[in-house]
Structure formats: structure tokens, C-alpha cells
Length: 384
Image: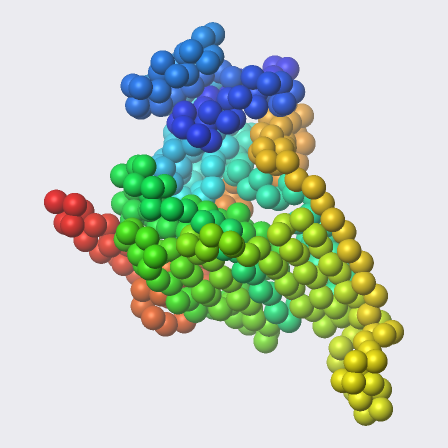
């Protein structure tokens, strides 16, 4: 096999984008094996654009056709784990869109099944992990450049969505269709990056607002406090109603601070001495100079690194890496098993806001699914 034959399940905006990436030759080790969508209207669109590519309405039929070596799931979140398992059952490699699922129970089932198929490739589309900026930030943290983390703070409100966006599909922003709002649709990449770079918290407390500024039943505004268990804390803020949104990440360590602005610029301030040593050894005369504006000369060294990012390039990198793992055993950037962490964090945020209390990780999975079921059933009753 010189190229992986990819089956694209779901031919909407994302599936169409992946098909075009391959058609344009941007993924050297991959070709389109087949396209699948349950919507009959999508067949004409797909066959017009890709006349040589087989089209299926049933993904199981596609999996058993012999046309594909691997699949990517561009479908509603609830069915990601099911499709992953069905592919792996048939010795078909699986790349899941984020999130890996809606709740941890179903993702754990997928992870366990994938572990029983070690010769197959199972990955997740965490394309931001290919972003050189966030790779740089992770490297700085892992290398201890700013010491032990004391606080993380990410305001990511660049997800503005008008009412028309939600009205365009009956499944959008629903408990039964997507399993949530901004936490499961727009912000999973940042939730993954937070735990990938800074680790998982031990406790979560969330204030989420549901249908706050949009006519939807799910969350469109979230503020969360993380407790990392060692005194370090974090704040995560996201929403879909800020038309002039902010993207700013700060990570404070005992030896410096990293600030990321607009996912384009990283500012690293490395303290010449750890903060505690400064506190213990600086004279009041030195402190006075700082307070009077004469400092903080000599306290830290500053480095600024700016990055350029072209949309799609990061998705291409994950697709190419996925194929390279299949063909050459190149290590995965985002193993599918990693998807559980972001799902658990999102579940914890939801559960905390539903119960109005701090939630410990690992979460009570039965309580979560019980509370989610209440909201799905209520939604069904409202719709009649």
C-alpha cells in the first residue's frame, strides 16, 4: 500500500473540506476511497465533484465494500464511538473528529475496543496539536522554562455564532443532537490543549448559562474554575455571543509567565530568579523601585515569538500523520485514546453547572448520563 484509501463518512462542510484537501494533492499519502452520507441530496454533490469515487448511503456497506482502508467520521458526536468501533471490528483504521464522543462511558468502550486491536490506527482530529505555536508552549512547559504551574487562564470567546447558524440544522446545539453547545462543538480543541499542556485538574466548578443569548437549550456561555490539587488553579471562559471575541491564554509559573495572544503570538517572560527566592531575598529598597516604576529591570528576560497559520494546514497535518502511522508506523500526533480527557473535562463542566457544585475527577459517570438523559427527554417533550 503506497496510499491510504480514506472513506469520508459525512459529506458536509468538514467532510467536503477533507475531500478537497486530498483532491488538491495536499495529502501525499492518501486518496479518497469512498464517500458516505445518509442524506440522498449529498450524492449528487459528491458525484459531481468526485465522479470516480464510490458513494454510499450506509457506512456499514462502505466499510464492507473493500473500497476503504480507513475512515474519518464527520458526523454528529453521539455516533463517533459507534462508527469507530464498527470500523475497527472490520480491520479498518479510524480517525474520529472531535470530540471522541458525548460522554465518557461511550468513549471508554471505544478505547477498550481499540486497545484490543493494537495493529490498527486509531486517532482523533486534534489538529491544534500540530500548531507550531502550541507545540512551542508545550515544549516550554515540559522543559520547565517557567517552573511549576501556579495558574492557567484562557479566555476563548472567538466563537461568535448568530441565531441563523443554529437554525440551519435541527440537530445543532441540542442535547439529543450534539450533546451540548460550545463545550462540545466549538471549544473542544482548547479544552484538549489545556490538559495536553498543563495537565488534568482534580476538581472543576462551572457556571454555565443555557440559551443565554441564543434561542437554544444548551450552553452558550461558560466560566469554569479548575483546581489542580497542588494549590494551582485555572480559569476557562468561552461563549458564542461575543462578536469581537478574545483569545488569550496565560500560564503563570514560579519562574515566569507565558502569554499567548490570538493564537499567533507567544510572549515568554523568564524570571532571573524564582519568584519565591525574589520574595525571600529582595530588600524593601529594591521593591520600592519596582513599585515606583523603575523596575522591573533585571527581574526577567522577555522573548516574543510570532507565528503564521493558514486554515486547513493543521487538518492536513493530522490526516497526513494518520496515514503515515498506517503506512510507516510514524508516531501519532493525537492518539484516539487521548480523546477521553477532553470529553471528561466537558462532562465535568456540564455536571458541575447542572448540580451547582464542585465536581471531582474522575466524574460520577452514572450521574452524568442520568442528568444528560433528563435534558434529552425534556427536549423531546418540548418538540412534541
